[in-house]
Length: 583
Image (cartoon, rainbow, N blue to C red; front, side, top):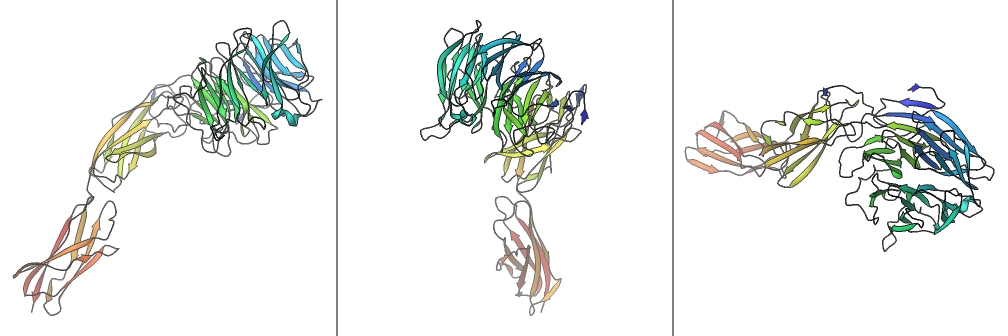
């Protein structure tokens, strides 16, 4: 890691796969492997934040500033703090207030920063960061959520004397107008109500899970008029009380038609803004062991950032296409330790307006140290393609034996720093079977290993789902005819034997492919000058051996023939041995 100027600021590139795989940009057509769902070109700048708690994050794209609020609750005398950074992760200044601060909001032209304070709403000039007065209010012990919708600042106020009561305190939603007056909206409920503004003069209010709200609500409001009008509302528990949301964050899509919710109980919910019904297509589940903590759509409508609390190598942040129907694999980040934090803080994700940067606030496991990450997703996607079709070996595929299906993937643009992967399926008479992933080598070749277990055609489909740097490739398909596996019999017999001592023959039976369900039973025939007759059958031992013992009925040449008829997955086999019989 290289340390750069700026207090507590570091830049990471080329991180390990457990965190972020940063790709080296390369020109022209480049043949490389296809990515597992996780790694693409990006950079990650990290600044250690001068805060011991976290309450809000907002981004001023006009001036390229990032504001991070330290709620600093717990004592009446605690000072409030808003740390200000530029888009490269350098701290610009620190705004200190007399009391703790919570919610943050910017007006439409980003000239004024509104800060939720203990005794009111504070205003700051975004060019000078100097105070501009504000609105005095009754003391709020719990911290305010602040959002600007329809040209009006909306804020929450809780009335309780103790921070320990905030999670279940009665909270009111009010508005702050340009004439420095407050207005009661009439909306209220229990808990630390959260606000989020969206396109089309929309306002979103969500209720976190709390002792007085076993089935918390989510509501959308029209803030275009003088009166705040609710247009949609939903609670999520079923008739048995199961399925209630555990809200950690919420966000409007860039066009305002969808709402994404970071629900610690259900993961990432995607809802239709009009009625808060579930969207027809949702996002994939977060990795096992992750608990949703934050969510944010990029302003250009391309990406969705999903933050989580996870341990070890489980991703804490995933960047995915905003379109849930786009199967492009996500870019994954793992935050672990004193250089990164351990998880994405609730409500700790915001984008620049053009989608060129994602700002993520992470926290340690205890929740008393915080980091600001400045992440630049790849700005361009490049094409990917399979070339030359697929081949297989051995040439004749047989049921129950290993089969190798080979191909080549070619990518334009950036080369991944780690091997990528393709996925494969086999479709036969019994349906479609997932074969997992295959790693692509540096020259672009890959091998899918399989063991078909059914006769007839087996169709192999190989896919590359893409990543945030490369578009998905068109699937490549290859059909293989699967036949029966071979069997064989080998005999060891004496050249000569007598009628009195008898004939003793040993043998070995081998069946390739899928193991037989039971030991093979072999047919034994004897042919001499008196004709052909069937002897007692012999059962093959577990190691494949068997013996044939016979007392010949006549002298001269006697031929013993041992055969197996085969089964559904194996061909039959036969072997003969001739013995000269003496008197």
